Length: 153
Length: 256
Image (cartoon, rainbow over all chains, first blue to last red):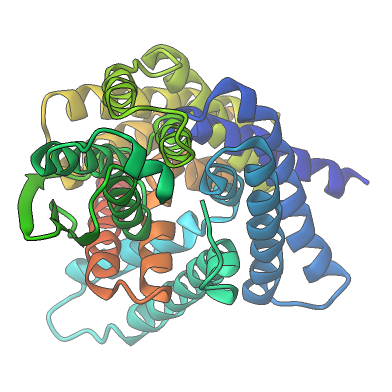
């Protein structure tokens, strides 16, 4: 139960950024709810569905993408507003800067020391972060990608 | 379409001006490439152009419109700035009203001007505090305890303040990312004895800088085949991430 309560932190994580993106006050509640739903959906897929983090993110992002499209149309708002705010807690920021920070460690290597370990660990982090970002973008853009001729707002 | 014919015909230069203004507002509010292009296209047609061709790059937008034998072209400089979803929503509503014939061209012009004058909903200090809280929430999501949440909130809030100050003075993304991540990580590092999970706090403290909107917009530009703009946005994000990594590395050397 404790582990699931932690998912509620996805809402404040998303809302700070929603303020930065000047999301109107009327939309903040929906952004927070969608952020929790997305983050919990990923945990659900990973804990019970046996998904890895990339596939879990894809499932969560699809949920966010379609829910945002539906809610955005209903409220006559831009769906991207809900989708991006809700996706923020799943952006793999830590993987990204740890990878680059690891690469900067090459500067400290002695003249002839081998740096393979640094490259491998940074490479793994970068590839993982890229796959997660791509999964997020695919889920959010899915309504446009799957129905290209449909009138989207 | 027929409703447009009943209106007095607008000079083509004015159509061009209004459509470009709408596209420029979308671009400056962080809309993706497809949205900026379709906003210009739709407003030009709604205002009486017969054909409209758009160019949207990361720094410029352009539009050529035609009606009969007349043709007009113009470009505007459109630097990329942060996302503003209130503006995006309001422009869309204005445009839909124009297309439905509820707005005249003059009312549309005034609507756009009013949107351009909008002040942000939230004051800077409130944003700094709440983005700090966001980073605290990230620390909790990473398994941090209450102490980690508190010191991350403090460090990230100060980092956001540094970022706002440097951004206002015109510093480039790499530089404000270095300075802000340095301040945030140093503050959290100096206070790490208040938490049993310092790693969660340190990792979460710089996440306010991660460029979420350009990353997602960039990746989605790539997926919908706007390769050039996708690369520009992803490169911009990569430079900010590089800045974060430099700031973090320098701060960690001070701490150890």
